[in-house]
Image 1 (tube, one colour):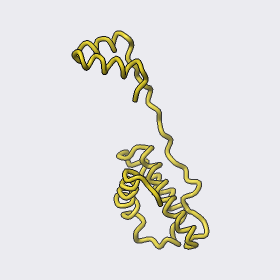
Image 2: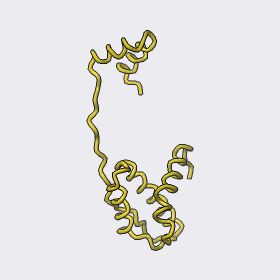
Image 3: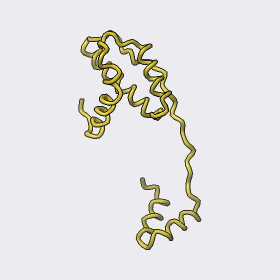
Image 4: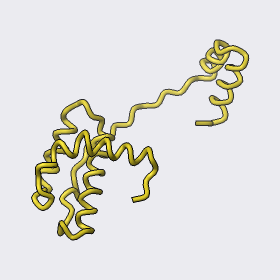
Length: 124
């Protein structure tokens, strides 16, 4: 797989932190959809992991199991069709023009230019 270094590091972290501790003692042919679904539900209910990260963890496991399918070690992917936690969008808060001006004024001469540029030019 041709991955960017940051993506590879994230996947390795997910595998070492979440996937191996739960699945390393289970033969790949014995991984069942119901067990994967229960594990995903446990991760989501733990409260310590965001819905987005639970989805990422499930996606990494699905990729690993997909590779096992490609190698003909599995007939189907037990991580297909999982019920995943919904990502709750937080309402975004935008500064009003007066707030941007106050922020810019407090940032000094160079900071003012930077704040105004970022606020009004849509730069990320």
